[in-house]
Image 1 (cartoon, chains in turn blue, yellow):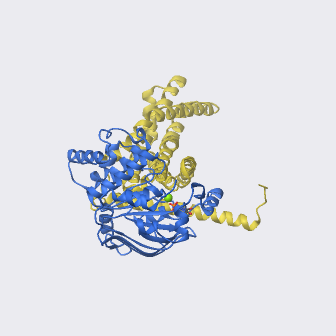
Image 2 (cartoon, protein in one colour):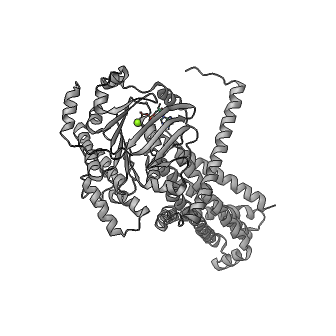
Image 3 (cartoon, protein in one colour):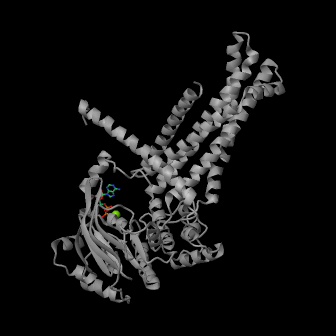
Length: 290
Length: 269
Ligand SMILES: Nc1ncnc2c1ncn2[C@@H]1O[C@H](COP(=O)(O)OP(=O)(O)O)[C@@H](O)[C@H]1O
Ligand SMILES: [Mg+2]
C-alpha cells in the first residue's frame, strides 16, 4: 500500500482538531534506563503537552513500551529527570505521588481487566477505591463511561465473555472513569481487524475532544499513527530519531525515518538481543516483587 | 547441543547464584510481610483501607471450601493412628493406652501438618497462580497506575484469611482426627466414647493445643508469603505461571515440614 503524504494530510483535515496547549503535562529529560545490565533508553528527552495526542512510534524492541511505562512512573530509571503534571518524580512525596497517579489512566495492550470481576465492577473499581460516592452514583458513572466506549449493557458480563476489541474498549472506559488528565495506551489496535482498529482510533480522538485530556499512544501501525497523532515521537533503538507533527514526519528527509515509514512487515523483526534472551531464558533480576 | 561437564568454577558460581536467589526471595518475603503489616495498621490513614469483603471472600475460598477434604483426611489419619497404635501396643499388651499416642500425635503433629500441606496445595498454589496471571496480564501494573497498592489490595486479604483459617481448620482437624480415632478404638477395644473423650482431655494440656495451633499460624504465613513471592516473580507468559505455581507448592510444603521438625526439636527438649 502506498502512503501519499498529501492524501494522509487531506484525510486528517476532514476532522477539526482542538488547539493543544503549550503547557507540558509530562516532561522527560535525558532519560536513561536499564533492564538488568542492558541499556534500553539511551538519553530520551520529550514532552507531552496539554490536550495533545502524542504517538510514540518505532520498530519492534525500540523501547516504546519501556518509555510508556516510565512516563507512568511504573519503572525505576537509571538517570535523567521526569516531571509528571509538574511534579518532579524524584522529589515527590508519597502522598503527592498518589494524587498524581489518580490523574493518570492506562489502557494496556491486553486490556488488563481484572478477570475475577464483571466489566461494570472493573470500571467502578477506581471510584470505589478513591471516592466516597454512593454505589448508585458509581454505577451511573460507570454506565456513562461504557456508553462513551459504546459498550452499554455489557456491565454484567465477565471480561472472558468479551471479544478482543470489546476488552480494549472496556479498558478505555476503566482508564477514563476518574477523568484523568493523561491517558496512556499501549498498542491499542494490535491484534484487531482493521475495521475494529479504525473504530478504536476514532474513539481515541473522540475521547480527547470530549474530555480534553492528553493522550499518549504507543503504536507501530503507521496508518493509525497518522490518523490520530498531533505529534509523533520516533524511537530507534532506545534513542529519539525525531519528534514532530505528522506533516514534519512525512516530509522528513532522514533516511532512517523514511525507512521506518516505508518498511514492509517482514522488516519488522524481533530484536536479536531479545530473541537471545528468550532463548536462554535469561531472567531479569529484581522483578520478583509487586 | 553437546553435553558438557561443568568446570569446578562454574559449579561454584552456580551454587553462588542459587544462594543469592534464595536470599533474595527470603528478603522479598520479609519485605512483603513488613508492607502487609504497614497497610493493615495504616491503610485507613492512607485512605486505602484493607477491605473486609475481600478478606471474607478469601476466607471462604481458603477455609470454608477446604472443610470437606480436611474432614476426610484428618479422619482417615485418626483411624490410621488408632490401627497402628493398637497394633504396636498389643505387642506389650498395653493396647488400652493407645489414647495417649493418638491424642499427642493428632494435636501436636498430624492435624497441623495435614492442614498445612492441604492448604498449601489448594490455596498457596491458587494464590501464586492468581498473582502470576495478574502480573503477566499487566493487571498489577493497572492497579499501580490507578493508585491502588497491590500489596494492600491483593496480599493483605489473602494473608489475613490464611492467618485465621489455617488455625481454624487445624482445630477442626484436631476434633475430626480425635473423633475418628475414638470411633475405631471403640469398635476394636470396646472402650466407650465417653471414656475415650475423658482420657483424651485428661492427657492433653493447653500447652499441647498451643503447640499445634501456634505451628499452624507459622504455616499460614509461610504459605501466603511463598505463594505471593512466586506469583510476583513470574516471567514468560502462561508457562511461567505454571512453573511458579508448582514451585510455590513444593517450597511451601518443604518449608512447612522443616518448620515442623524445628518446632518438634525445640519443644521436646
Ligand atoms: N521486563 C523486561 N525485562 C528485560 N528486558 C526487557 C523487559 N521489557 C522489555 N525488555 C527489553 O527492552 C527492549 C525494549 O522493549 P520494549 O520497550 O517492549 O519495545 P517495544 O515496545 O518498542 O517493542 C527490548 O529489547 C526488550 O527485550
Ligand atoms: Mg511494546
